[in-house]
Length: 207
Image 1 (cartoon, rainbow, N blue to C red):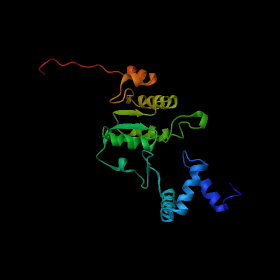
Image 2 (cartoon, rainbow, N blue to C red):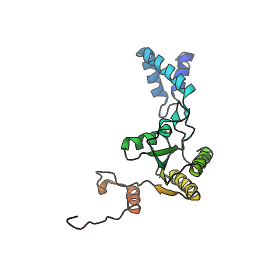
Image 3 (cartoon, rainbow, N blue to C red):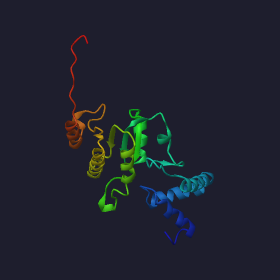
């Protein structure tokens, strides 16, 4: 490729490959599109990207991405201050908000425990989390980490911190999706659903 494209075009294609899931071919298509079809869009992208890199940081309280010292979730007085949901990524926060089922506070780990990748408690901001558990009046810590070995290990560690401060820790339920038929559900998902099953309380007729 180095013998075909100009040095700057090579640099652009290589730079685009930093994006997740983007290989050489995809990077080439993006570069050609921006240069040939949408130079105005490329200029806007470059300007916004530069501004974002300079201005967006982690919220001082929950580690969500924001331009301010506190994100809008931490700054709002309309959130339920008795609940703290611990999640792995900003995308997880968006998913929970879109569900409309949670109105408490958040803490974003920005990852999960992964010793092989050098990600331990300090990389996840657990010192900051523990300070919040010690100083804020939470009644429950909701663990919403991924359903993986690493996610489970992370949830267990955070639950241990919550119990240390006398707080209730709960794990969000995983299992059969709404509208799902059992014959098409994988064994691991069914096992989770069975383990997390809840009692059905029957009401007398007429109640």
